[in-house]
Length: 136
Image (cartoon, rainbow, N blue to C red):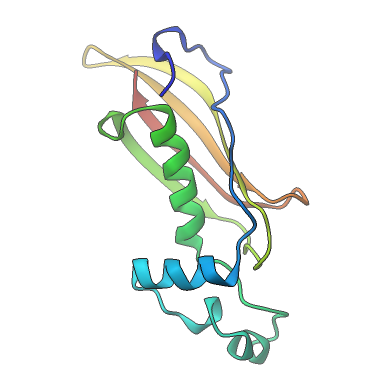
């Protein structure tokens, strides 16, 4: 957690850098999430669809953004959280989750920050964008 009392517009959350997405990561996430779509775990199915290999679940990237938020504020401080899937995350890619404070308001007596969020791969591809509102 961070000292949120001094947060200002433009503040950046400490980036969350995760290890490259492995086949093991995908298999474990499939089991944990119940999403066993073969596009994420079966290379033959992915190739039959014209892809070079399997790719990560979009919800895995969303989970990384959620972790970015809960590393910064307590889970009960999250007021809203939404994402837009922009591109696939190939197996072996290394995502980084980032966030920036774009507004600070007071709603019903509660100080809140609005954040722009993103997951970006090492080659610069943005795979997920989103926003969140958190209580400060």
